Length: 195
Image 1 (cartoon, rainbow, N blue to C red):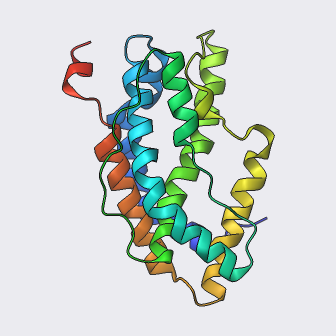
Image 2 (cartoon, helix red, strand yellow):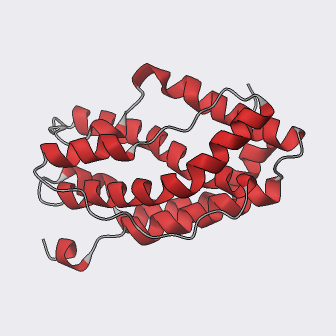
């Protein structure tokens, strides 16, 4: 199955932001360390708890309008359970203005759903290194459903554009904005950098 032009445009427009986020936020290294794991999981909570209320309703409505097979699901609740396992209370959601239209919301959801794919990879690597996975269930919330969810989301991108309910420029803007939000929220905080 070849990648859709919309996915290719998203990947191209966000590639540098994605690489910068991986390099500067040091997500995998911070999750691997027992000292920094709670702060990293809390940062993911702030990200999802901020993103979901502003992007999921628009995406769900768009999905219903075009008869898509993708329904956004909250990951914040699962991350809150992981934080409880680590003995940490969930922080406040990160504040964000969010997407201005359903097309932009799709770009924001692309960032969140993509983090799920990356989370599965991180979880496998940590397992291979023999590291404990306490507090990391959120990295693979859908298990064997992950591939099907991703394909359903890719189909929704195409359906939304074909139906004239979104366009590539809107979706790409949402993806760029979503990565900017992730970059802001997932960076190590000063107290964590000292640990």
